Amino acid sequence: MNKEELNRINKNVVKIIKQDREFLIEKMAGDFEVQKKTSRRDLVTSLDKLNQKKLKEELSEVLEANFLVEEGDAANNPVSTSGLIWVIDPIDGTLNFVKQRDNFAVMIALYEDGEPLLGYIIDVVQNILIAGGPDIGVTLNGKELQQPENVSLVNGLVGLSGPMLAHNMFNFVSIQEASLGVRVIGSAGIEFMRVLLGKQVAYVSNLHPWDFAAGRALAIALDLMTTNLDGKAPNMLKSSVVLVATKKAHADILDLMD
Image (cartoon, rainbow, N blue to C red; front, side, top):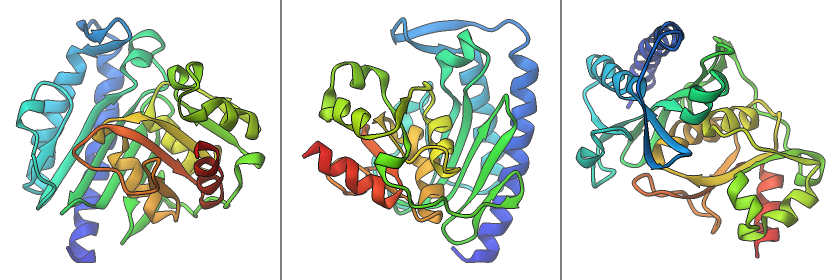
């Protein structure tokens, strides 16, 4: 896809996700249904489903493509990464959304043949939008975002999955001890934003494709590493443990996991 077409799509998606933020701010002030999915900590709301439907319709008007989604339509998700695919997380951090009304995001990504073209993460409450992609650069609320400093693990904060840290999976305790400290937020989108903005040197968690697709597109554009724990690119159709980090912190963390 050429740069002119990417810029056209980018302009339209930025408008869509900004308007979507206003939609969610208005809707979360009212009543909505909350259901359990796999456990009492894994929730879905009627707004997740409504917002996903809304975003699919709006993005289809911008560019016809397949959809990789979480809520309701997952049975229709593509089985191949071939062609163009929109990846949507209508409310990332649903438990935070329900219990805090804070620390949640909306994420959109566009991939072609398994490679990222564009990514969007908006912190809904704080109204912070990171948008762009490898070929057009990245913006923070419309202004160019420079790549973060390449800081090592020992000199930075790291985001880790709370349950994985509690069970010391993949030697997480050693990662915690090597870093300046650990932060646990409960939203992959917000965690990715902190790494993209240089507030954390890394984030590691077990993620679904819609949890990391947008962040990966933005991370690549900012010369950050986004891989599985074997150092390889994550499969866009499967859940896995994903690490996003500066190059130095990425190497430090993989060494500690050996």
